Image 1: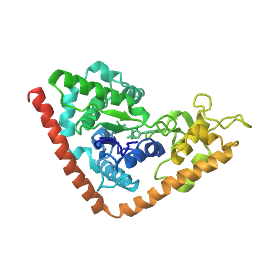
Image 2: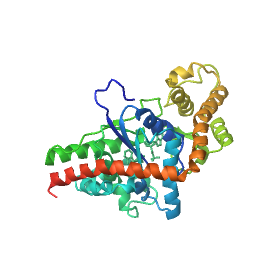
Image 3: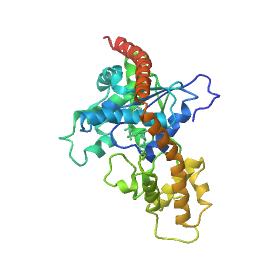
Image 4: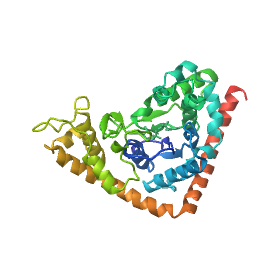
Length: 338
Ligand code: AMP
Ligand code: TRP
């Protein structure tokens, strides 16, 4: 969290992919921190529709997916008078600076990215789209184009943020100080940095999943959310001391404690003190998740009827974002001799 004691407002940037249904992990690991930061920082948030192209999709669904994600972000509490919300593809400097980043990164460092390895594990690297390989260069461009000091993301993006810092430092060392070297702002352990799949707590909750029973979608019906939480995998032991925070040996219970703690603003081991039975814990988690999600769903429904408003927000956001990003691109072009 930013502090109001910070001398100058920090520049914040983050992004979310429009493909697939947003879930509780997105809300607790990222979106809620975006909402918190917006009053304290100078915040730019984008729906990264160009990154979405790395996954095949129907054009009409793609277009709708981007609008849906932007609408959801507004419903979750982003205020367009306080932060800048836009679609990545409406700001050409992102793709232009991505090329500069591709000429800064090495093949070897991109090949080490675990997200690339995970995403190509099934189909093999040979068939993988080159965009999936160079994805981290576009992400670095997203961040560096805004001189961002701070990038609020979940734990799974740590490696991409480290690469972004390396690229910024390498570029600055070669061509003179051009970019701000950003910091990853990852929730501290136990506060939503990595929410796990409820049906298999050894796997991350993810938009692309073959285990939907354990993914709480932000558009799920309340009854489905309740059912998913109540069926969450816990452990076979019971009795005193069975409800405790220990991610190694009790991943299911720990994930539930972390969910509740994140929603209540308490540490998960503290939360554990209040419970001796899994059933009681699950009932309270279900209630807390519904209390967080239902107002967002209601607001989403209202905003979905105001398509012109959302389009307006995105047009204004793109104008503001373009002003900042095109100036940084010119600086980078000048630095390299273009
Ligand atoms: P994505 O769904 O990959 O577009 O991610 C959008 C944001 O949500 C990123 O900051 C991710 O790090 C974060 N995120 C995604 N999945 C999770 C999860 N299971 N737990 C916590 N944060 C997550
Ligand atoms: N790669 C991020 C993810 O999969 C999304 C993303 C793209 C992003 N550009 C970004 C996140 C810039 C933060 C900053 O979640």
